[in-house]
Length: 377
Image (tube, rainbow, N blue to C red; front, side, top):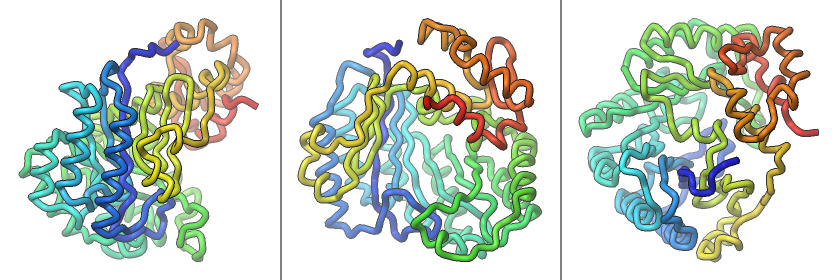
């Protein structure tokens, strides 16, 4: 069982962006300065209402949207309130997402003073044609300027988001993008395939996407190429240099408690999952009352907790521990999932070493199908 006094993580949602990308289905939209100020005031009221001073916060992730569109003073107010309302560990990993074209020296300097020690930069592609196809607002030169400014301001932990299998992209083009990006020397790279989501502009278009075999090669060769540059794959889509894996995301995959703050933000708190309302008016009017804005509440049964332990943990390349499963649930993994484990071991999609279960290279490519087997019926 989880210790109710154990450390937890915080996610802060900033729902604003300069322009919504054509593939994006996240809860985000452009917002003028007055809307942004109004939203931050509501966010501060929520923090006042949910403050938790006993349990330590080991990581904070400010995501969106594009948090870097906010005026630095608003970011300052958010972090001032976070530190007043919560017990943030001195060595906490604190990340902010930022898009090239929205950063400058003043903002980066302000981020450092606020205690932010990790940047996640949304590059997606170093090729101008591909950036335009994705609906991005920035150029590759904008990205290089943002990356250089971040280094000058002393940021020593930077992630770069990179997307493959995008319209008209070839295998050779992806490999070139990968090497070009890896050569910059960021500490972390998130490399993932485009998913065409319903309701996005991409879903309404006829796109020329790489075929299944090409996408397979793109993904399969990513790990080997990034390894040449010192990056190790620690999760299905994430690669990091030594000691730079994202602690916040690992917390999600290990079912660590996290508190989501802001419009639509999700939480896992003990045995309960819930999310904040996605209705702008409701959130602004009721953020001072957490119970009034929380919806989609679900109490996790032991069966659901075991399933989440498996299908979230299997996202990581070192998989899940049989010993940890036994200690947490007082029952062996084999007793609960023995048939499923045997089935996929025989298919060479799962492997067991040193009392840990993890996906094989072949298993990663069909991970959704494998993980679905652990879900309660």
